[in-house]
Length: 126
Image (cartoon, rainbow, N blue to C red; front, top):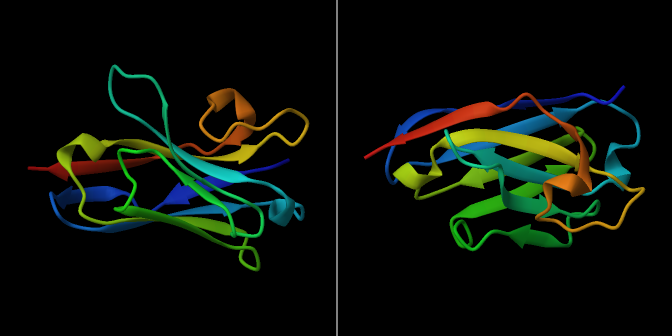
């Protein structure tokens, strides 16, 4: 059974930084694309970033490009999201997810992922 556990969320002020972590179980971690999504109250879950199994290819939503950086450490089965220059609009529950290798992968689609973490709250005050 695959488990994804996020951590690192919190309450910060605008302009601050946070680093989210997502620890995954399972020996096949390194063969999967991984993604970060977020969901604000009353809104749909939206794509934030994704990374290839090797870390050589990354994807970002336009709203976070230049501020957020995704990375992974396959030896630790962990994916990270470094968030800089945070804005109040970044307030949401952040989820990590593992891509479903059985289907065509589109980084920004929720349906491209088959396992999700429980989420970690990020709140940015103005």
